[in-house]
Every structure is written in C-alpha cells, then in structure tokens.
Amino acid sequence: MSHRRKILVVGGGVVGLSVAWRLATRHDVTVVDPAPPGDASWAAGGMLAPVTESWPGEEDLLDLGSESLERWPAFADELGVELLRAGTISAAFDAADAGQQDVLAEHLASRGRAVERLSGRELRAREPAIGPRVRSGLVVPGDLAVDNRELLRRLMGAATDAGVTFDRRAAAAVEPGAVRLRDGDVLDCDTVVIAAGAWSAALHPALTGLVRPVKGEILRLRARPGALPLRHTVRALVESRPVYLVPRAGDELVLGATQYEAGFDDEVTVGGVRDLLADAERVLPGIAEYGLTECVAGLRAGSRDNLPLLGWLEPGVLVATGHHRNGLLLAPITADAVRAIVDGDQPPTTTLAADPARHVPTKR
Image 1 (tube, rainbow, N blue to C red):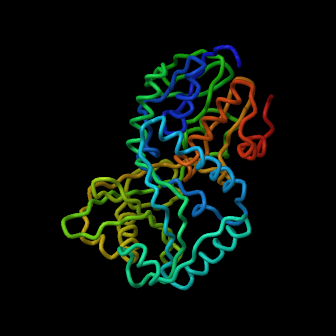
Image 2: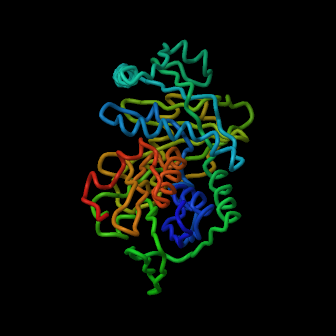
C-alpha cells in the first residue's frame, strides 16, 4: 500500500465521483468541479449494456464493459442503489435494421456471447408494449440498468461520508502537482486525475484532439392512467437510427438519445425532440399516451476509437475520460483501475487497452 497522498480529481460526474470515492479510503481527495454531479451523467439513460453496445472491431470495449458490468451488483450494493435486472430487448423495425442486428448477433456469437433471436410476434409476447410493425429482435438477459440520478445522489453522499471535499471552482489547466483555476488560484497536490468528461481536452496539451463533446438529447416521459407500461429496457433501430427506452420507478420512462457533433452546444432542439418521439412511437405506439415531463441535453466525452483514456499522461497526472456512451457502465472498473494505478498496483487487465499511450507517448 502506498503512502497517503493529496489527490485532486477534476470533474464531478459519475466517473469523477466514483474515482474520488474509491481513492478516499486511502488518500486525501478533493473534487474540483463548479457544479457536480455533472450534466452528461445527470442526463444519461442509465443503461448498463455492454453487449448491445458492442460492434465488430470494438472487442476491447466489449471486454472492458463486460468486466465492469460484473462489478456493478457489488458497486450498487455498497451505494444502496437498486438495479433494473429485467434485461434488454433489442428491436429491429425493418428488414435493413434486422440485417444490422444479424451482424451484431454473429459478432457476439464469435465472442462466445450468444443472444436469443426472436420474431416480431415472439418479441411482443415478451414485451407487450412493442408495436406490431417491429420486425424482429434480440433478447439480452444479462444487461442491467440503473436510475442515474439516484446513483449520482448516492455517490455524492458516499464520497462526502468518505471524507472527499469539493472545490466548486472551474479548472483551467492541469500540470504535475497542480491544478490552475480560472480565477487565478493554484491548488497543489501529489496527483491530479483528469475526469472532466467532454471538457478534458482543454486541461492538458496531451489530450488535444483526443476527447471531443458529443451532444445527446434525452426525454423523460411518465405513463398516464391507462397507458401500457414498459417492463424491459428496449433498444431499437428504426431505419438505422438508434433509440432506447428505459423504464424507471413511478411509471417514468427515459427516452434517448440523439447524437450530434455540435461542439459545446447543449441546447435541446425541436428537431431532436421530434425525431426521438417519432421513432419511439413506431416501436412503442403506446407512448403517445404518456406525458412529456422533461427535455435535456448532455455532452458525452467522445474518443477517437470509443475506448476511454485511462492511465498516466505524465508523472503526477492521470486521465480517466473519453467514456462516450459508457460512462455509467464503466464507472466501477474505472474507479478500481485509478485506485490501483495511484497505489502502484496492477489495474484490471481489460483496462490496459485504454492506456492513453495508444494515441500519444506518455511521460512515465
């Protein structure tokens, strides 16, 4: 075990809070963020679904996500957060969408991860809310989901109880042993962890061009009396456009998500809302009877290859960012990896593929 260190975690989203909470058992930790728990984490759908997120060529991401999923039940138990365990239904609206699903199913089979293929009729027997125009689907029983906002509230509380302090100012730059704030102050430390999501690239020159904002719009709906509730998480392709619906307690439903390369624009657009509702209604006609309660946009932290950046940038500066759509899913394994790296231990093997050295030489 290493000596007790002073650590600054820049970023208070789900990744930053998870990292800070884990590190606080052995170190003095401060989270630097003007408004934790962050916008992308707050706007997320809450799916923990490495299998239905996978695609040929992204085997490292599948392995990383699968190992993190295995850590989720214990992670949730520690925080007192409930998991939705009904699994995921992946629905294909038309023949072209079904063809893409076949590619996914064959890819998963090649990785030893078989899924159950169902006709449209068989799919509706499992999930009656799915409409008659849906052609076929896959059932993935192992996927989980979590209420992201309840998770963030619990993480804030757990981190505080563990001794994490919060500096609600904005970071301007990171260097070994220090974080420079926008107000001109400098915070000294032994180690900095950059976990600022879509804003990470501006904090260190080694991250320039490696992390970018990817806008996503999310809607929240609530079932009104007589509306047919949804029992499973449903991910669908509608004429090649992805849409997902995640049930929540209290007859709530989370609908997402658009994906735009729009810089740091975080305003919800009429077109985005229209397209999400139109595609979702083709899969689940009953949502026309739901109430629309919230529209929100978040900025995911995209990377060049969809793998996060996880490891040393230089002595004293660690990075844990670029998780894109998988920030919630990868939070447990990211936190465990960062704690291991800080303490000089071996991180989980699946995280080695996320070393930032794959893009730029790191200074060790």
